[in-house]
Amino acid sequence: MGLFSFFTGGNITESAADARDRGALIVDVRETDEYRRGHIEGARSVPLSDLASIRRIAPDDQAPLYLYCASGARSARAASQLRSMGYADVTNMGGIMGYRGPLVR
Image 1: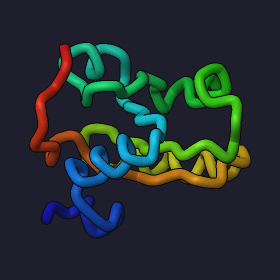
Image 2 (image 1 turned 180 degrees about the vertical axis):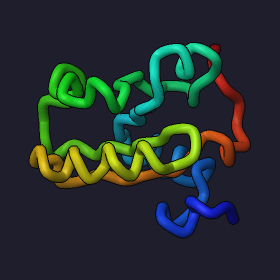
Image 3 (image 1 turned 45 degrees about the horizontal axis):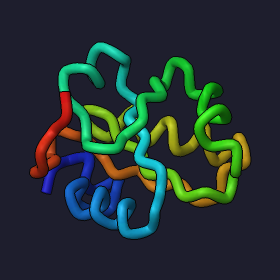
Image 4 (image 1 turned 120 degrees about the horizontal axis):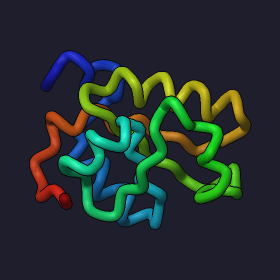
């Protein structure tokens, strides 16, 4: 278990499976160039620097959102910001560095 797993509460690979089971939106909050180098299948790119644009892909603030970044730090910040924006069901999955599934390029 990595350092940021302490803050996220678990394993990003398991969290991705949970997100899919729930029909949740998986959100990659890394910058666009990082996303293009490899991301979790089905993840949408919404960089932390443009988090307000989330309303375009998730207009329902009750929809479950699962966030990740490189290490878990940006996704933790994004989760906090989204909660302050009124999103009720936000999960920080942690960092993609701990992901054990295939990546899409």
